Image (tube, rainbow, N blue to C red):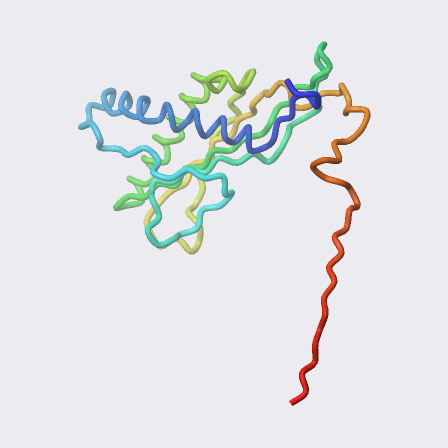
Length: 197
């Protein structure tokens, strides 16, 4: 641990959820195919993952597409005995699916929602990054208005408990001015010459 103590960013939470889902999705999808007695590879795992909180149709978009985003912490942080704090972070996982017809797109959204739920509940520690995870639910949404394909969107919501969000140990006695001096302004001198022709 450095002198400043731990510090968890929103992107740390989003990254832990994304990494866990990407790692486990092929396995749980293959098991779902076996259980449904369909040919391996019938359903595809998400082909793109991002933390942009919206779907936009782009040329060459890789579908199905998944977005993982946190809107921030949920509730009051908890001070732990070592002076660090833990906090619950809201997390949403959205998966956009496409199919030849609306019922098929709706089925795929339901399938991906169930698989996201299975992974997050099966790996609440996000492979060692989080302390806990609570499943909050899922909902099915319309595709964006500018989306020209037949599709469906599922949004899965959860809360992730992260320890070491921040510490109250304080900062060092003096700032490290070798890397950055607050208030320092660089002066630039420019000479203009006027040409007379």
